[in-house]
Length: 144
Image 1 (cartoon, rainbow, N blue to C red):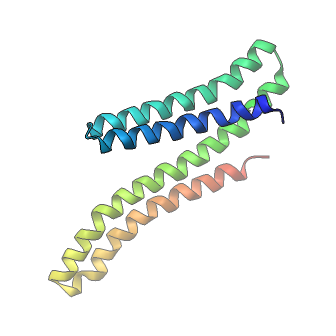
Image 2: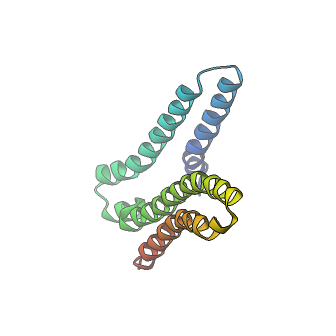
């Protein structure tokens, strides 16, 4: 691996880390949190788009089909799909548990007999993350 390859692989990571540091400094200086978060998401989307488009553009320009397969292809998209399934389902499960668990604790404190019914709603939130992991395993098992 040449130095040139290392620089191109490290550049997105350096950009994202610097973006996070700038956002933390902006929030500590009293800037709008919502605007700072939107800027973080925009910078992540830009780096993601560049990292996804550049290998395909290079392979299309050179006309090299082997480079197109190595640059991403079906396996790369399968890995991205598996990661998205797991990540998004875990975020959804976390939001569900964050809302259901305090309600379950409140219901249990008022009536201890309601514990069994209340804990079921917390477990349903956890099930969302398990479904995402199951879909990821199914996707990854199809990769040859």
